[in-house]
Amino acid sequence: ESPPPSQREIDLLAWTRNLVALATARSLYGASNPLEGIEGSFWEFDHGLGGLLVGICPQVTARKAYRGREKLVQSFAAWLRNGKHKEADVAPIIANRVAMAAKHGWELQEVARSEVSFLFAGIVNTATTSFWGVLQTFNDPKLLGGLRAELAVDPNSKTIEARLRDAKLLLEAVVNECLRLGSDTYSTRVVVPKEGVEVEVKGKEYWFQGGAMVQISGGTIHASKENWGEDAREFKPERFLKGVSFKNFRAFGGGQTLCPGRNFALAVVRLLIAMVVTSLISRL
View 1 (cartoon, rainbow, N blue to C red):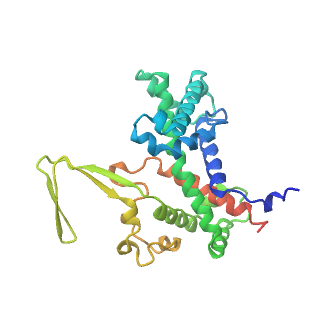
View 2 (view 1 turned 180 degrees about the vertical axis):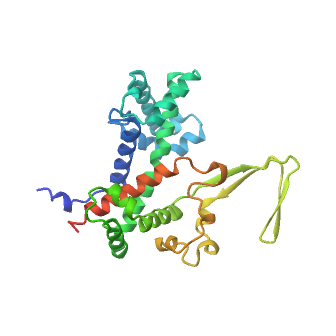
View 3 (view 1 turned 30 degrees about the vertical axis):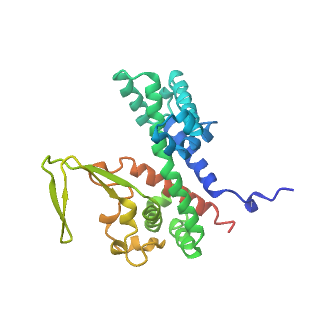
C-alpha cells in the first residue's frame, strides 16, 4: 500500500524544476504552450548544454542535448505555425517578440529557436534558485518560522500575492542569499581604447591592452571574505537585513548588462517559496 502524499519521498530538485518550468511556460505562452508534454526534452537540452557549446559535431558528441533542443524547436515551430501565439492568454511580451521577428523577415525556424532561448533564460536559473530557497528554508526551523510569521502578517489576506506585498523582507533576504551562494555569473567587457588603459585597484596598477576581453567573476566576488565577512561561505540571509552593500552583489550582472528579466525571475522564486512555506503550515 502506498504511503499518503504527506509521507511520500520526492526528488525536491526535480519537483521544483517541473513546477517552475511549467508555470513559467504557461504564464508566458499560455495554456497551449509548446513545453507541455515535452518538458523532459528541455532538461536534456539544459544538462548537455556544455557539449552543445563546444560545437564539435553535436549530433554525436552531445546527442541527447541536441535531440532535446531540436524537439523543442519543432514544438515551438508548430505552435507558431498554428497561430497559438495570437491566443488571449499569451503574454504581451511573447506576442510582441513574434511580431517583431516577422516584421524583420525572420523565418519560422529562426523565430522558434529564438523562443526556445527566451524560455530557457526564464526557467533554468530560476528553478535552481527556487530549489535552494525551499531546501535552505526547511533546513532551518528558525528561518522557517520567521518566514511563516512574515507571510501571515495579515490573517485576513487570502492570497499569497497580497501577503507578499505586505511583508517580504526576510523572504527577499533568503532569495538574495541563495543567489549569492549559488550564482556563479561572469560579466565580460572589452577594453575600448585602442591604446589600452591603466586601472588602479586598491593601490595596485593594472594594464589592460586595447581590444582585450576582461571577465568579472561573480562567484569569486560572492565568496570573498573581504566583501562578506568570515562567514562568507555560510548561508545567513540575515546579512541582507543589516544594510549590506549591494555593490558586491552580482547575481544578475551589473552595469549596462544587468539582467533585464531579473524582476520576473525574483517574483517567481519568491512566490514559489512563499507558496510552499504557507501551504504546509497546517501539516508541519
